[in-house]
Amino acid sequence: MLKAVILDANAVARNLLTSVLNNGGHEVVGDANLAPASLARVIRLKPQIVCIDIGETNEEGLAIIDQLRRDLPKALLFLVSAKIDATILQAAQQRGVHGFIVKPFNSVAVLTSIRNTILRIAKQQRAAAQPPADTQDSAALDNSSAPDAV
Image 1 (cartoon, helix red, strand yellow):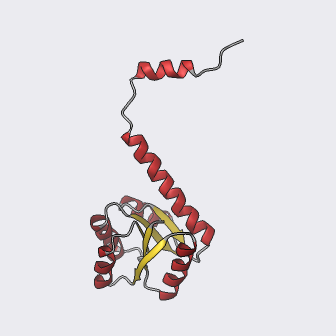
Image 2 (tube, helix red, strand yellow):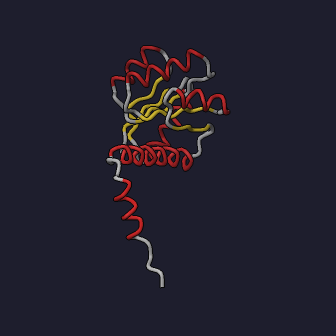
C-alpha cells in the first residue's frame, strides 16, 4: 500500500480519485487545492504518489510540478487532466511526471496506470543496479542457453 496525495482545485474530483485509490489498496493521506499553503502541507506528508491536476498547462502549473519534483524527489507524479495532448505530455515528461490519469476517472485505468508505472520504474532501477556484464561472458551464456541442434 502506497501513501498518496491528491492535488486538484475541484473537490468532487479529489473525492472521486480518493475513492478509486482507497478501493485500489492505496492510502490517501491528504488532498488539497493548489494554494501555496496547501502544497506546503502536502509536501510535509511525504507521499509516495502525487496525483495533480494543474488546470491549464501554463508556466504557473508547470512550476508546481517543478516544486514537487524538488521537494519530493522520490515520489511518483501523476498528471491528472481531462485534456491531455502531445504538447502537455511532452512538457510534463520533461519535468519528471511519471504517468497520466485521464478524467473522467475509470478506476481500472487509474489503478493500471499506477501499477504499470511502479513496475516500469522498478525494472529500470533493477537494470541500473546490475553491473555491466563482460561481453565475452554474456556471449558464452547466450550460447550455453541455446538449444542443441539435432
